[in-house]
Length: 459
Image 1 (cartoon, rainbow, N blue to C red):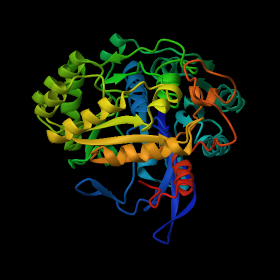
Image 2: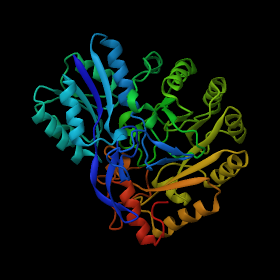
Image 3: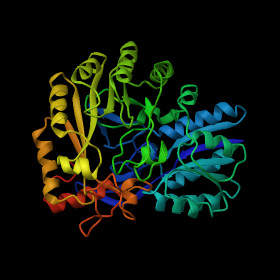
C-alpha cells in the first residue's frame, strides 16, 4: 500500500501588496489559529526561500505540520512494508493543478488530509475533486472540525474515515481497515516518547518560517517539546479539540512532555540532515514550571545551538529566564491577548497578571532576550475602550515585536460554543450586536483596525 499524508493547497482570492495584485493563501496544519494572509509569491518562483536576518523573502508564516509529520512516521514504523510519504502543499505554495499532477504521478492507495473549519470550504471542494479524479483513492480526514462538518464529509463515498483529536493511533486503525468516525484516542506520555521521529517533507524541510521571536538564525527547526496546555483561553483550538476533548473549557486538561532522551537525538539528526541554524519550540506553553524548563535548558546547552520558544509570562521566576538565556535561548513569544485585566480574566479566561507580564518583558529584554507579544482583539463583550487599553499596553511595554489578531471562533473551542450557550468560566463574555463573527483572525483584525482608526492594521 502507498499512503500520503497531505497538507493540501489553500488559496483564498486576491489582494494587493503596495498596489500589486497578489493572492491570499491559508495556513492550516501546524497552526493553532488557521487563517489566510497575502502571498507575495504564490507560485513558488523562488525554488528556495531567501532570508535577510529575520525576514524571509517573500514574507510569510509557515509552521511545520507537526501532527501530520508524527503520524506519517508512526504509520511507517507499524507498517514497514508500506510506502509512506508526506507532502506539505502550503509551504510549497503549489497550485491545485500541480498537486493533482503529483497525485497522478504517485498513484497512492490512501491519503490522509488535515483540514480545519477555517479552510473547510476550500478543503471540501478539493476533496470532492480528488474523489472525482481518483475514484480508487481512499480518503481519511483529520483536523480541527466540528461534528456537523464531520457528519457532512463522511457522506462522501471516497472518505472512509474521520479522526477526532490526535491522529497517530486512529491512523493505524484506518490503515488496518477501520472505517467511519473514530473517537478520541490520545497518545500516552510513554507512547509519545517511544514513537519514531517525525517524518519531514525532505524537499522543503528547512522552508518553515516564523519571523518571531526575532533573532535571525534561519532556517529554524520547528519542534514540539510537549502536547497540551492546562490553561483554557477562550479561543485556543489545540487544547480543546486536538490534544484534548474540552470544547467548553470546563474539564481538566493534561500536558504530556517529551523527554530530553527522545528530543535530543531527534533534534541533532534533524539539524544535520536539514541544515537548521536554530530550534523553535512551538508548544502551547513551553515553560510550564521550573523543573521541565531547566531540563530543556540543559538539553539545549548540550546541543549548543540558538533556540527560541513559545512561553507564558507567569509560569517561571525571573531567574529561570536567565537560565534560558545562558543555555542559548535568544527569544521567546508570550501570549498576552489583552491589555485590560478584566478581559484577560473574565472573557479570555487566561488569568495572567498584566503587571507581572510587564516586569517579565522588561527583565528578559534587559538580559538580551527578544520578546514577541501576541494579542487578540474582538473578544465577545470587549469594548472599544478595552481595545484601546490593549494598544496602550503594547506601547508602554518594551516588546521587541508584537502581533495583533482578531479573536476568531474556531470549531469546538469555548468561543465557538459561546455562540450557542453561556459558559460559566467566561463570565464577561457575551455575544451581542458588536461582536464580529468573522473566523479569519487576520481579516477580522483589519476590520477592527479600521474602526479604531489604527494607521497600520497589520501591526
